[in-house]
Length: 298
Ligand code: MLT
Ligand code: MN
Ligand code: ZN
Image (tube, rainbow, N blue to C red; front, top):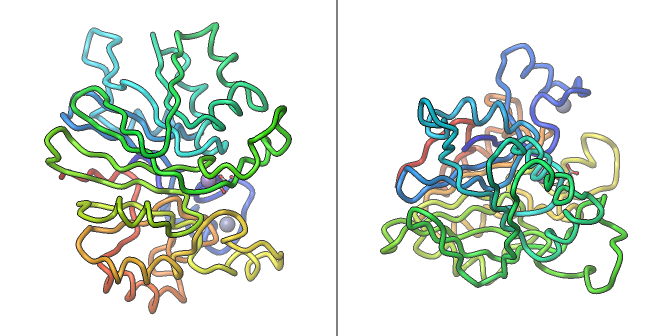
């Protein structure tokens, strides 16, 4: 897990809240949501490309090029959304000899129009864009299989007014993945943005070894309480931890981790006041908060 914070990271550059201040003092930082996944330990795929990507890559020895080469172990990028915290890092990859980016149709379109990463990268690297279709498994290098799951219709703010029709209300603006290794040796679900607990997610979670879920907010009214605003977690396309926990408790088996934690989420700050009861419920459901740099071997 290369990064476990929501957009802005922890501490957020312009935030002096108690959590960000403590994180500054204790260097308990979280970088923005990003995962690297591999089925054979040799061919790796990024899931999302965070604005913190350069530092995240340098901190992961598995992702270093072999000495004397420019042969990166990265074989491509899979996107769970077109949000800036998941896509700004694509520009950081412009030195690549070639770059394959897998994204759902609306995300691909947004990245060639409102936020034109595709055209911007073209003069720098040979980028190949592949369309992900929910339910259709993609075969990747090293025996990795990725099955995209449609998880929500929330589109990035920059893409609110895309040209053309049919973008509104599509359920695949946000997706998750069920990863398996060839021969079904192991499986992992990655869903850092989750608007609601869907039947497709239920299927994906069944039999998975590890499930990594949206932990943006602890409670639905967290942001309203912190900023006095009216935005709810659900309204922003994020099912709060408090509301996904009952689903975990009802589906024991996998190891559950929460990621994409916003800096307002008390669970992002170990030992912060008010987390006691919720942290105990997490533990009871076999769940924990993910940490930057965690290596999960299945
Ligand atoms: C989200 O996860 O909802 C977005 O990344 C929010 C944002 O940073 O604009
Ligand atoms: Mn985000
Ligand atoms: Zn803060």
